Length: 158
Image (cartoon, rainbow, N blue to C red):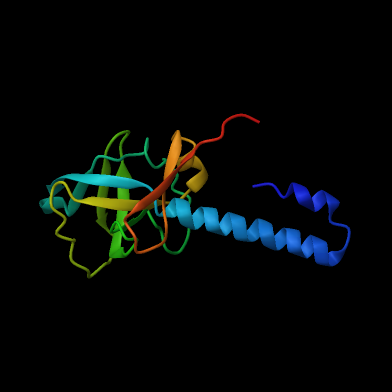
C-alpha cells in the first residue's frame, strides 16, 4: 500500500486522515488475505502427531518470522473454512508441496480428527510472501462465511 494522496495533505488533520485510510486499507487487506489460503488433508501420521496437507511452502511461504518470538506460530495458524481456529494447531513444517500440521509444543489439546479430504485454511505468517506466489485471490464476504464472493487478479509490475 502507498498513501500517494498524503503528498497533497497540507494540514495535520489531512495527514491524520490519510494515515488512517492507509491503516484501514492495510488491516482490511491483511484480514482478507489471512482467510484465503485453503489446503486439503491428504494423510495422517498419528504416531508422530501429524496431519499432512497438499499445501507446502509454494502455497504459503517458507517464512518463519515468528520463530524468535515468545509464541512461535510455525508457518501459520490452521482454521476451519469459516475462519474458526483449531486450538494450538499449526502448520509446523513444510516441503515444497506438502504441509505438516501438528500441535504447538506443550499443548494439551487433542489433534483434530480431520479426515482425508477435509479442507482447512492456513493463516500464513507473511502475507506478502504468500500472495506473491499466486496469480489472484478468492475473496469471501466475511469471517464465518465459506462462500467465495469474488476474485481479485494480482497486479504485477511497477
